[in-house]
Length: 429
Length: 144
Image (cartoon, rainbow over all chains, first blue to last red; front, top):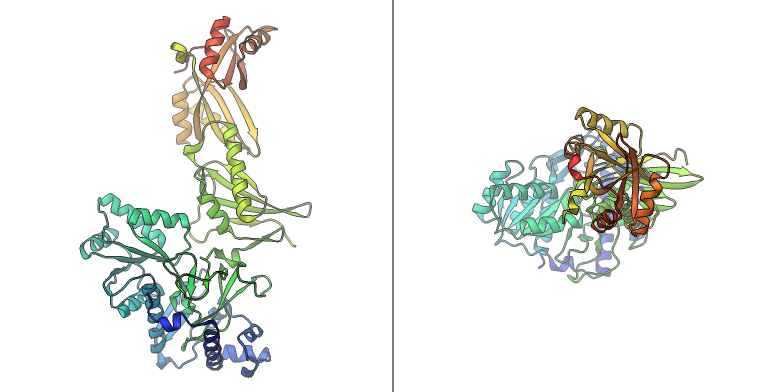
């Protein structure tokens, strides 16, 4: 199903025309932002220098730190009286990032959410419980307005009071939920404790944190939903940037609104389709806060194959953060890849630590992983077998030989905030 | 068949190969008043398994588990041997002649006799053959 079939299925040539027109408009819009005036000036770029979509590569990247430096309103391209909403994103350090919206921005954003939800078959017949923070977090109000636009019955339940949430799902016949995957897991556990089966549920939309295919199967089995991955970030309105279609093999990113590049985070050069790198986005329709070549820090790839649903190019599910990326003997490795491998091996735990050393001019990667208590047979040979298995599975995914150390259950550090699982001991390179 | 009474429970403890692990294990057992009759450490690639024959296997298991150790019971047999030159040969020959394959083994020299502890692949078979050969197996009942 389509919310806006014409635009969602534009032919490549028409799409590029539209993108270029909108890019030029965006370049005009950023002239209202001092940061960009200076940026483009010092790069010697006049607006006329951008004649094709590829010319965008001449423009320097915008980084999250630039936005922080512009605190609070340095990136607004319209006067404050045109701003109708402000959100902020929490920074792990320092000041938050401020994002602003005009009335038209809010409408554009709601339409994008409506596209996503319609794409997976949700309609005005559905009852939608939105179980995310409704405050400064963009996920709450973003989905709320999109769902209302479609005409669904929206329950702005926000977070907390899980028992009440479960009662509402049961009593109101909720068909569709939106929350983080970890909250969905918690929800299913509490429902089990309460001995309530959530029979009305059909669809689960999960986002705001990375989650694996294993997690998808678990959530689908426990909640009786079909689970969809939702991607977005506040700097690009919020959720709604990219979303899985019913194929659930990659996310459709809305190319008419977001100009997508995938770059090698070390060199800044573009990589080919099918190659992993950092997602860089130039939003094409933002009024209040236009951005040029914004580095999302998220790692994905543009998928080469088309999609049965006839929408345009997909990105792969986010596999990590570019700032976590390691280069081991020339091979890019993301800690999230290691995590995915370990999740699939029941004999070991999900906690891990990675150490990188340089021995005789060669990078050596050591992965410490806990064995799961129940799997210890008492036999050394079984442990050695398990060790080999982990080495092999890691090799299959990373294409890299690693040293795997089995450690005692509970002995690795647990992280409450941002996990620091990689220790690079190579020194200056 | 009462071969079961000769099956002895060894405790096997998974341990990383780093300083202080054995001390922690020994301390835990000492606090629980568990006496270690014999033990050995098998090492492979950064980790090891500490194997111990103790007088109270159940108590040892509970205590070590509560201390966070990963512990498993492993079935072994214990054969008495003479504590004098040639004692090991006598028993080893019996085992060899009986076709018993040893996965690993360690020994202790007690007050009454020396004891050879064996982990074998077919334990019931081994018990039968050792008994037939006339050698003496220790009974499970002496470990509580």
